[in-house]
Length: 288
Image (tube, rainbow, N blue to C red; front, side, top):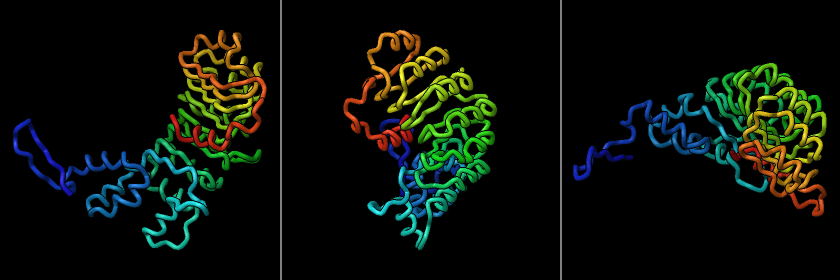
């Protein structure tokens, strides 16, 4: 493979091989191609690319597909098994393998659906530098979830995206104790009652980004957040159930927030079932 260099217009271009590119430059480029290419394409180009793909810097930001295990689709795991001639590979094993490639340097991690608490434990031990973490519904859906007890290991955490609001009070209590730079919380398919709203205000008074799109949150609980979180610069409560998007009291309380989105929110669920909460989980899981 070749790339061309030219110092100025009109000067004949010089052809050079990609494998001759300085190693640190190659690592910098490959760190941007994504997990799928790092696993299925890059290592098979040439020896220098394979060597560069093993550098932990290429694995600092890991976005797993939402579904790694599906009977309907040919998933990334299926392609991985086919490429490497592997007979069996679970979601947990694949996730640990990819996370392990970072050798503790991972700063952004978006875990897939289907991984167990064992993966959460592994991430807590192997990724102390995490700044952004997205946990799927599976990891936090039961009251006995270990996630709250793991938060203390991510002292650099600034952004957390959750697949549900279960264990929310315990999770944000631990965040307040361990994560001094925390600024952003996103929850998919949330149910925000008075306890959750009060916990957000009490434990995260300086939070800047709060995304609750598609949540069930009554007017009075939204007011608790609007009155208590004075440093919010972005609040997303679109498509929520429990208050009207044109409520004057809500709009007045949110007038000091730089970006306030509440379109589609309604007091009553006139069209029950219209909101696809599974889609909202994925939207909250990947989108910025």
